[in-house]
Amino acid sequence: MKDTNQINEFIENHNLKNELLNSFNYLLEKNSSGDLDIEDKNISINENVIKYKLLETGFHSFQSPILKNGLEIGHYSLNYDDKGVIKDDFFIIKTK
Image (tube, rainbow, N blue to C red; front, top):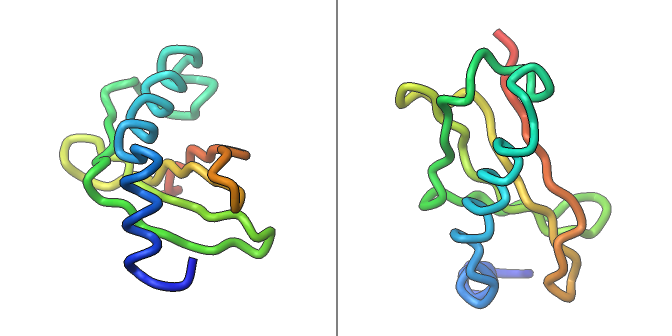
């Protein structure tokens, strides 16, 4: 993806806001707080804030901030290939 229009088109065509939210919620449901290295599951993402990054692997990463009590504590990302297939997801919590 070369420009903002292509990125926005990808976000819309792949219903990325819902995909991020659904994937994040599934991750929370299927893992314990200990597995995720968090105190509790009282966290969320802001699917309306999506950052794009082209990775060295050639995958397209779309990240949303992970929030706890309104503060950003990390990010959740979905990585897609050029065909729009999800290849991986990442749940990253910032260290203090």
